[in-house]
Length: 357
Image 1 (tube, rainbow, N blue to C red):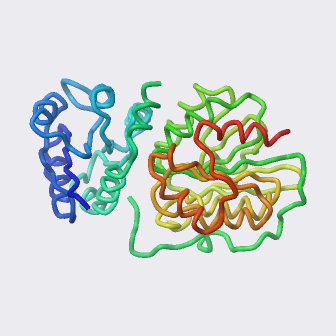
Image 2: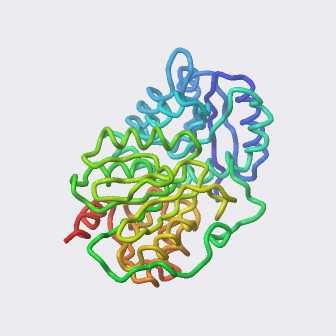
Image 3: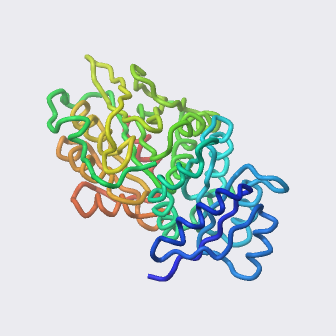
């Protein structure tokens, strides 16, 4: 595998120093430059174009979003956003994701050096995932801390089995799981849905605080209602609930109604929220009344849960490789026999709408 040539752009000298050091120590990654702002980065890129850019969004002279849009128009390149963990930073970062960024790595306002050192694995993984991303899809759509020591499965949150799954009814549920490239993919799917569509529950791998801004953006663009999920929220037609960053999302059924619980717990498949946890809860509570969809993303989170959904009688789909930014999660689900059909991204909205017929 060729060396991943990386450019770091951040106005903080500490961030540039620490991030560059972390990446340089990772096998297969080379930092070709660390620049204080996009204008300096532009000068450096004229000499040598990077494979991946690690980019801050709030900088003097030129903000990261403007720079990102220019890059995507000129020569689409994988970008990892390194953003401050604040409400304002979250809103700005969601704009950057919509403009074509591949992933988010968060940084606090204080304790920055220690935080970045502790989150080195997350940063390295994000850069490696970005290097494999199909940025052609991200550019086209834009034009329009994890633990790694132990990999838990969904048993850590919810036991296997389906004690509450009901026989098939007219009330249908759609469960979607996605990761790298998923913010843009979900925007395409949800903004194309009619106001009357099945209730939707979603896990998008995303840090705490960012999911609220992400849901608000999608709500402003869509006919359906989109919100960050809270415990007790009803799952109903015309509404999509997105798992909060840093917490797991569970589907529950009470009589004829579905609702969600938002719970704490350990990382599952190194993620919180985890797609496997959501899919298992949907298999248990909705069974054959559900449609499970696994979309673009790195890793295997969701593959086991989607198989449980299929075994419980649910219909299951995967986004096809040609339309994925990263085909990791769908590929693993296909490999395990969890997927009934693979469909292009542009067809997923129609599949959801057809569920009510």
